[in-house]
Length: 369
Ligand code: ADP
Ligand code: GN1
Ligand code: MG
Image (cartoon, rainbow, N blue to C red; front, side):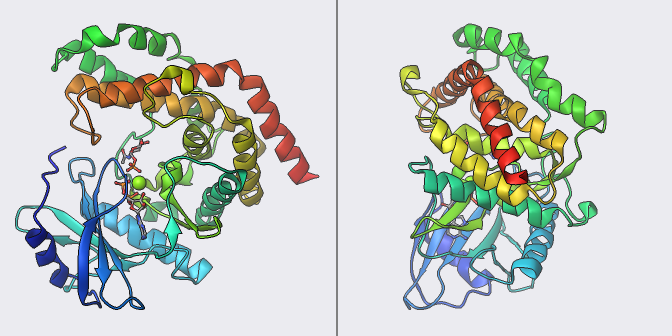
């Protein structure tokens, strides 16, 4: 959305705006995120720091100062507990001491220390990776469990509110701005049949049965960095850290881990479930989250497993109908393809729901024994 590509000169001109300690060898586009524009700043000194420069998508994040204030509070809290610069993001200040810099065109920029020798996977291959990812995101929640909720504000209100997302889909259908409604009739039917069941987490939250906690809210697997031995190193992409339910974080990771195909897989036959990876992630997650999780939260995890691919499909489909202004796309039907793949995943998950639930329960009982 509105993310025009920048010339090398424009990128280079930003570097003196930050307290970067390096003679720059190169600046290269980096990563496969769908929202921000990310560049790696490479230092000529191979023993010195590299940096990660990001243009924050301010169409998606409407209040960047508030967002960066969240990041300052969250990373400070994590560092007080972990006392390590390689396991927590380090924000590099601007020359004027702010956690970001705004250029003349109104773009917001930030810099982190680049965590060298790490890997970010779009898809998971081994149980070890899945287990480590579970540990990282479960541990992240545990570390934030005692952070003052008042220090973390909503960066995108109603982010995982399924009723809000469904209302947005309905609005996009009513307006049909891009003339694409005719392409998505079966998908809309599938979504509507399940809309009531998918509101269960919201209902439990409103009733006070599920506690509202500070959660990550964007736990797809490429938002955790693993080291060269595939041990968890650092949870990244903290832009959506805000109040939510634990089931959201569990479900969003599972969406990317359990799927035998990519998030945007074109051939529905390739979409299947890898139960071993599910079990490994669940073990890692519950092991770390055990100190604070309530029984009700454990019972809600399976609902998140269905909800997150579903809500993601609703969001991709809405963006497709609105003309692709939110997620970065590689082709005109990319959002449709993504939505279809997520709905195919929901259908697969529904088939094996009991087995998935048993794995969660068994893993939890073993940990408590
Ligand atoms: P987006 O919101 O666009 O997904 P991310 O903050 O997740 O942006 O960054 C995009 C990618 O950049 C990540 O998936 C990861 O590969 C890489 N990345 C982010 N932060 C770091 C870091 N501090 N060190 C090394 N790589 C990073
Ligand atoms: C976006 O920023 P990234 O690529 O990690 C999106 C998530 C979606 C995800 C789908 C702020 O995540 O909510 O689940 O794409 N982030 C935002 O791949 O909308
Ligand atoms: Mg990301």
